[in-house]
Length: 261
Image (cartoon, rainbow, N blue to C red; front, side):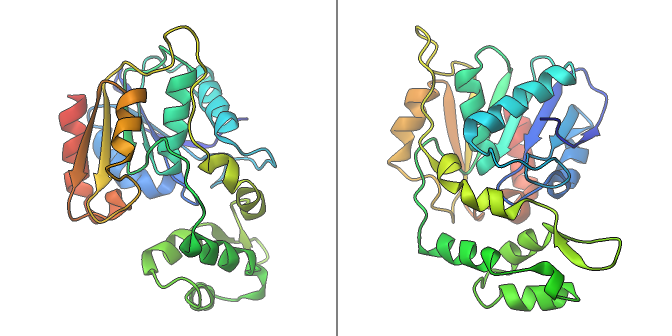
């Protein structure tokens, strides 16, 4: 599948940023522009997100296949890959199954373990499933509706990024919410590499960065991370939630640059 993408910089070293669930490339534009002083930065929209095409097929393997196609189509060699949340899971799945393709890996606030849909996430799913954007005439009204189930303003703004105004001035989902929600189990499953001799681990330098206020990576996950990524380091940004690039953009940028320099 061809992915829409944004591109910044002209350096010979490629750097790919993969956004998270319900995100899009435009959320990473400020970060990408800063990186572009040192790297050739690519920010694709995942399938069913942003301006990329929609599909009923939506699993970690299919998203990883999209990434290898993207790399090949754009003649990208030896990139650094950074993924946030779902983007991090795609990146991990990719490097464990397409060995020898990248220079370094950065995973933001996610682990290879299976993630179960909890009560909080069920509220989000129900909120998204119940909204028909065409029934609203303003983003304010949409936000008010979302606030009935979602207290977090930042999460509501992330969701609203998935809605756009059509040519006839009505509102519609830009992302394929239905197919995303129908396949949550496939993107939440444990990441298990294809075993090819001794190639079932990723032996290139890897940095995991977690938010100190987030529970997406806990102490029990460290062994799994170290097993699959033996050359990995784990850094915590204490004052950040899961949304590292929002809560602590400067600290995140410094951590990334220290790792890749």
